[in-house]
Image 1: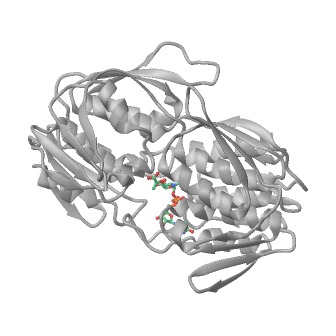
Image 2: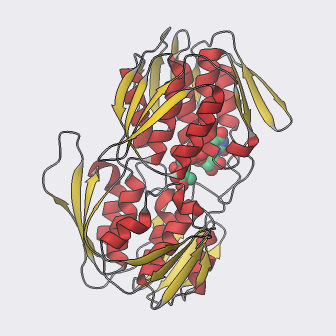
Image 3: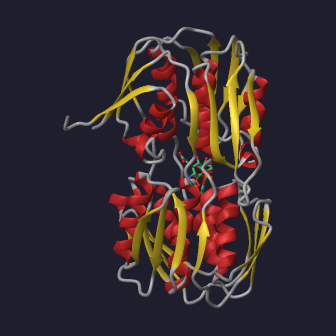
Length: 430
Ligand code: EPU
């Protein structure tokens, strides 16, 4: 297993470009199952989860090809026939987002068999709402041997209210409803930019979706969808991670190709703790813009509670915790989305952080100097937080299990090296 070796203590300086959003690219790729025509997707990040989904789609019978472009990959996807409606355990356990094939498969082909994901490092993460919603749309659901089977002879529009807001749940049902007969209304829907991006793609494919980005999404079903081209939105979590990297190292970065509108809660929190974040230049035709970030003076602690969009994202909680170890005072961090997303706290403590975890609340007392140590990544965003801590620490940090970070950050060690970090990948075969 690859490791990262980081020698900390150097302020980051320079420019870094943000990749396309993994969590927008994944549903976009599964949306391509909804048509027999070619869907071309751009700005696809070069990360492991995308390769995992590509293998799953190929097993289903999808043809896909990838071309390198200046910004990310271009993927062409064409689904003429379904060879095999199964998302097997081996892939779903590697990547829970595999469940995003469920809605499209049952809507277009009337059948899907998807492994139940089981628990994961950050929480229980059931998919009961995806299943309930599909049942309401007219699918027959059965379970056997750890799999959920969905069958339908045409889906019918319905009204469905999510008891809990779910990002991939909203995406799955939006995709299924796009090919259902009649109207569907999804209430208490997720408002994340990735949900909006998927609705934009589906509308380009001929779907009729209104209200994506609000809690109420209306979908008028279409009898068929067609091919199109689409560029996925920038990765707001990658952008926020680099903003935080500048802040934690006392550096100054220009973070290019981000969408500041998607980062509002994060930028507001960074400003509150004493980080200067400003637009750098004009927005491009696609709405993307560069941001300049600089840590000015001392950081001050501030409490933070994770929330669904437009609140502070759970996917930045771990990185924010690393930052708070370097802020003066005490910050209470409350995780409301996942019940077990504090595994990084123990690793940060091994580096010298003063953190007390009590259920869903962690209190960080700073500022404590961090010192390099051998530590272990437990999930994707936790690994990013450990990289940030390593950049701020005195001496050498060795992070094990960086395959977690490769799932969702494109060439993070190269991007960090370009802006002055001392970080090396030690391959298991070196
Ligand atoms: N939930 C249920 N039942 C369901 C679905 C969800 O109870 O049927 C609960 C979950 O257990 C959780 C909450 O609802 O407590 C929110 O989960 P959600 O379904 O929104 O999460 P997700 O769709 O599985 C996506 C992202 C995650 C991100 C969360 C929250 C993708 C592919 N994944 O997951 O991203 O943390 O939304 O914003 O979009 C990551 O990129 O590192 C990552 C984990």
